[in-house]
Image 1 (tube, rainbow, N blue to C red):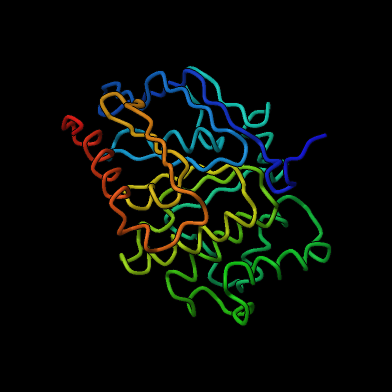
Image 2 (cartoon, rainbow, N blue to C red):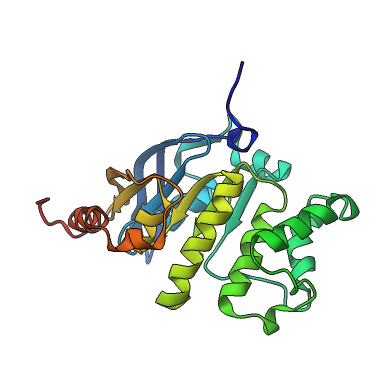
Length: 265
């Protein structure tokens, strides 16, 4: 008998031999070169690396928003665009991209409308998500009435409304100040633990990656490729005092060494 909790029955994803080249001023620039990656169902993976190493390009390919020149992506055995049509793929970017004339509830409902699903049949789900992201009481507020952190919470709720099995996050807190970003890290962990979608997070923050992920994929550029994988050993749920732990700082130094080319201690 399968003893896996329902919340963990999510899709894994597989990236195999992906290459992507762009033409820039007549020159071929290899954004990604032979990138392969396996993410188990219910896992949380962070991608980190310098600007131009192909992190966002890789995420866009996984999301079906771009195509590789070579290689393939499979999500639960299907192509990304097929998963998008099923509502099984949720994507959030640094810009919350909320529609300013729509309320919190209406912005969260947007993916359901795009997929042609009944809003009436999902009203309880929308209410549940509003409460999950801590926005109860703001259902009828518009984006201009919300703080930056609140807008990002709406964006995350919007990605979850179709109950996706895979969640892709591209620097969702990159525009926030450090204090608010730390708070949002705690919120994202809480939200993720309630649903356990297979998650890939692009970030420039080593501390953010260590706090949220099961493992960190360190990428290098010229061409964009995977340099190494750092396993994160901390049990969940993770508490704010983890940021001050000696093992946390040791791993921060290890990831920094891989990023900046210094030999590991």
